Image 1 (cartoon, rainbow, N blue to C red):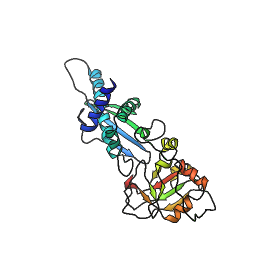
Image 2 (cartoon, rainbow, N blue to C red):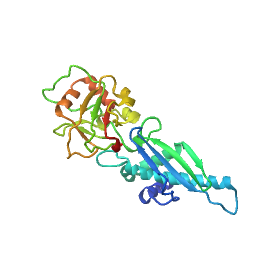
Image 3 (cartoon, rainbow, N blue to C red):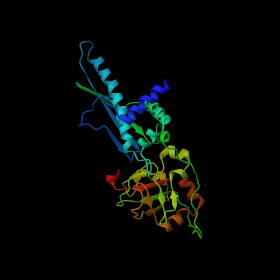
Image 4 (cartoon, one colour):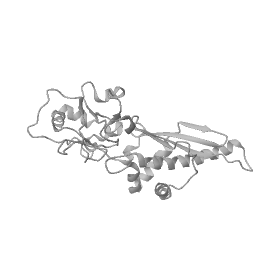
Length: 276
């Protein structure tokens, strides 16, 4: 039975076989990088038959809508960037075990709305990346090298510890991802999901994205005294990754309390609105 479930989902991932055509003028999914979630809809046609009644036909449409929603969920994963090299869909295709886990996860997520029409039914679900009910940890394992931050010779020791990090990366063509990396000018790794505690990644991810330069909805994440810096342009980096000035990196990594806060994922990246 398990093999059947896995095989069915693999077929859906690889071929995206049609399970009921969705109306082209309706959204199938929306990736929200501020809220860190996917909103996905599925559609089913209400088909009148010789037997039964409108309620039975609508219930059958709901079943097809849920099948269509699963297909759309899998398609949406192609647009969820995990890191510089792979999307969530790429990981799913490579690992059959994760296929089964994600299939079972989808079954546990309740619809946020079911809209009944005369001709069709629309089912919508919201899939959070992180936190309670999140699915990122099914596909990506953070914390492989927890706390192993880089060290600088002749390290400048900041006079204060920082409660987090805020990077303004607007106007540099950066795009959001579950696991972006931050480098200094010499491409030494400063911050990455692999350095986090796994529990912190599952709680809220490696970074919080916003287009608000005052990050008003997320101040609690970085605390009362974050280090606030501006990213530097580095066109040779992958689009998900950020480059900062080496001097900023020296200051950031100079105190143990700051490192502890970084280990907990207390990082905000500000991007242009059209990137989110």
